[in-house]
Structures are given as structure tokens and as C-alpha cells.
Length: 487
Image 1: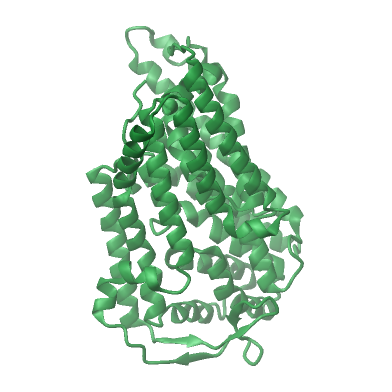
Image 2: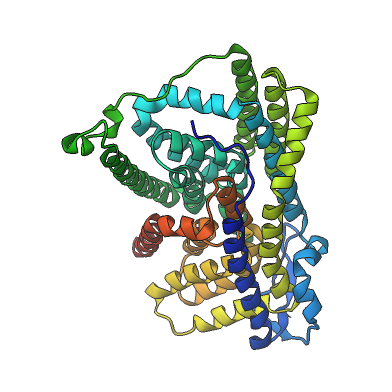
């Protein structure tokens, strides 16, 4: 087994990712010279959330202001963001990443990850198609019901390594985990963070109009699994053609699942106990996250819950597998250090929102798009709403933050053009979902790519083949919802 023994980020991956992020930072800073600075007048809704006030003006009241944003703030934005408002989530993500790095390195050093992969390959090598159908369904379900996305990140290196061990590649692991989560988020059947927040801000019954979102879930699942089946089949056939020593030309086109399992599995009771303890703890964390659908008090702490479960489960598993405390702390520290470049990338990526917010430009950007909607035909307007959310996602990855920013302005637009509220919410969650696995400004995507030892350009070279069809299908689904009078 060619298991990677370190989570360290390659220099090439780091340079490519940082180059893209810095270019986006420069573009955001350039907008501060192009767009007028100012902000919308805001008010507090019935839930105590600060939203744009549209009571006196359906388009909101924009007040231009001269905002001082010196160049040093731009240069130090990646540091200053830690002291800005709303930085708690960012800090949680950074701590989460450090825990992942430390624990995963310890799990690798005590051979628990390698043993886990041996078990999985032994069990599923001849049932890969079943696994390929069930894993996307699992992660889409977790995302569409409990709003899971970042919480799946600790599993990415395991799933990517599993995909490689089964004869596929790391991208396959990313597709049936992170892209599947994005599809589930896009459907948003009972997602409290995407659909729930947007419908609350819109003032309509939470989780109303569920039939359309269920249809979206089914369509996206079929599209994603269909892509995965075709993609992995091509890889299996390519591998078969390259194996000239054991297969002839006719066998090269055969289904690779009929080949004998090349992996030999030897049971290790001590490592098995450690793996069981780790699996039970992680399973408990997943159950707690799913239960947040009903126990709303847990919804703000799902990231913390899963980080604690990963820390406890990893520590316990390593101990039962025979790792001594001194060895564990040495491995944990090594993993933390290996994640520091990823921390730097996330800080730089997150600074884009800081640049636009502190310069008073973010509201101007929203105003630009809302004004541009004037005169667009009704049928095309819902697609334009989708586009607005997609563009804003580049600068404001947080779904709830975008909801408070956009929904109050999109609702009056819907009233003017007779677009139902739930249709606008649907366009919003579409844009908020798919973009999570498109933009390099999303912290979760950056972490996942680095843990899967994949750089952003290499990922997008393969990902566009499924992301583009997903985008086109969601556009058609919006037009379908408009045609049938979805509300």
C-alpha cells in the first residue's frame, strides 16, 4: 500500500493556491477604487438579526460614505481579520484544522489509517460499485439535513486514500465526499444553515416548499453518481490497459471489478481495537451532528463537536493501538506544524471579505447587481438572482452572512417581477451550495484539497466536468420551478 506518511503540503500546491488567492485579494482591493464606498441602512428583524431595511425603500437605502482604508490594512488584512467582527467561525475552522493535522499524523504513525484502508479494501474491493453509490448518498444526506460541510474534512484524506486503494484516484474521494456535500447543500431539503436561515430572513415557514428540494436532491444524486460511475470506469479501463504483463487487449476492456483482489489483509487485534474505538467515537460525532436537526441548541457547535470527537477518538484509538503518550504528542505536534501553510492560505483567502467590508465596498457590490436587474425579463431574472449569489459567494463564503445581506434586497425584487419567495430562496441556496466546491476562497475546500494532496488547478481540471453539468441542471430546475408556479 502506497500510503502517504505525512500530511505536509507540497511546495507546488502551496505556491499555486497562494498565487490564485493573492490575485483575488488584489482584485478585491481594486474594487475599492472602482465602486463607491458606503453602506445600506440596516434594521433588526424579529429574531434579532441585523438586516437591510427595506420598509421605506424596496431597494434599500444606500448611504455613500468616505471610508478610510489605508494600504497597510490591505497588506495586513490576513492578520487583521482575526480581530474583526464575526471572526469566531474562522478561528474555529483554524483550530479544527490544527486538530485534524495533529490527530491524523498520529493515526498514520501508529499505522491505524493503513489498517483501516486494508479493512475497507478487503471488504469492498469486489463491491466497489455499491460503495460508489452509497457514499455520495450518505454525504449528500448529511449535508442536506444537518448542513454538514466542514465537518467532513477530517474524513477526506481517508476517503481519498481509500479511492486510490480501490483503483481510482484522490479526486474520486473528493467527489463522493466534498462535492457530494455541496450537492446536498444545494438541494437544502432540511438544511438549517442554508435553507433554514434564508427562509427565516425571508419571513416564510421554515422548510416549506420541500417537494421541490426533494426533487433537486434526487436529480443531483443521479447526476453525481452517474458521473462517478463513468469516471471510475474509464480509470479502471485505463489501468487495465497499462497492465500489459497480466492482461491482453480483450481483458483490458473488461470490467475491472472482476479482477482478483491484489491486497492481502492480515488481522491485528490490537490495531483492530484502536480502529473500533476511533470508529465508534467518530460515529457518535456524526449522530450528534444529525441530531442537531431536532436539537437546535447543537447547530452552532457542530464543528466543535466533531473536532472533539476526532480528538478523543484519535487519541483513544492510538493508545489502544499501542502508541505511547510521548510518541503520540510528538506525532501530534508534527501534524500541527505540517498544517501551518494551510492556515496561512485560509487567512489570506478569508481576508478578501475583510478587504471589501472594511473598505465599505461590499454593499456597493450588492447594490451594483440589484440595480443591474432592472429591465431583465421575468424568466431570466431568477437566473440572474442565481448569478448574484454565485458572484457574492466568491467574496462572502458564509451562507448565513449572505442571507442577511441579500435576501432583504432580493425579496422586493421578487415582488416587482412576481417571483415567489420560495423560488428566490431556492435560487439562493443553489448559489450558496455549488460554489462551496468551486472557489479557492472557501476555507473548507482549501483544507480538503490539501489533505487530499491535490492543488486547486489540478482539482478544477477534473471537477469542471461534473460542476458545469450540475450548474446547468440547477438552472433548468429553477426555470422548471418558475414554470410550475413553485411557491
